[in-house]
Image (cartoon, rainbow, N blue to C red; front, side, top):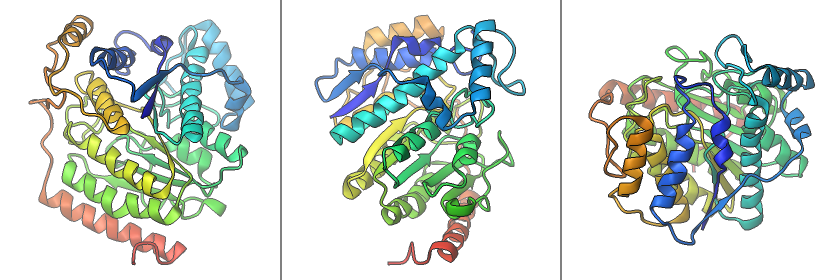
Length: 375
């Protein structure tokens, strides 16, 4: 059993026809789920109502009012020129926050995993938008859970971009934050290096894992197996929030990573099994991902994995036609079909780099926390 949080209104988070964050990703994912005619193990939920005061858990009142003003105006930018304002942007962004809070609440009550595809806005900071992100639903969800008395929360961010907003808001908080991303030496926002470990009570709880461009499946799974899973086992969170961007995909147009379409299910399965062993609630939320060729299929694969069901490899014909009408390009025909145009992963150098990186991070963390990785 798994919950899928969705609203047709999600598509109102729309920066314009030519913007890389296409709102078509939401409907195409939902439509693929419906085309598969998935039975009872997946329940679709509408985002519940929440007070907008919850935005103040992570954002200043001045910034919230600024977004409201820009939402009425419908022009200009919410940051330095990366995140345009549009008519209704306040309500659209808040709806996505409500979706994440709904997923968190349902998983806490039911002990079953939830997935909100319209979340993961990890660049939004206390006083500004950034990187197409208006409100930071991840940080809001963490603070919301803390107010409910849940102290042990882990955030795992596997987006290609470093979650600088989440890091900034939670930097002094002892919530476990693990962020695997393409190194800031090569990609926006230019942060997230291994020496950024947190401050105060949060020192040693911010774990940044910057990877080289063209990192492939093998090296990525090595990081999951040797760092992420042992850290979760050590920390024993009550709730795991997993920001799962698909911009690590080998054909994503905005990044330089080289993951195949097959690896995302493996990542989710590993974290889900660890969550089950620890009796942790597991919530997956969306993130980046700018290839419509990949995003809807990856999200449906993940949903199938969360619900523990098998989906047909052949994509439903009605969805193929819908995709081609909406995207204007030939549709993939198979669930796990990979792009022939994607980047090829680098091998030997990436493996050596990752092995050394893992060793350095382990040493850093054991200097702070003691014996984490040695049984």
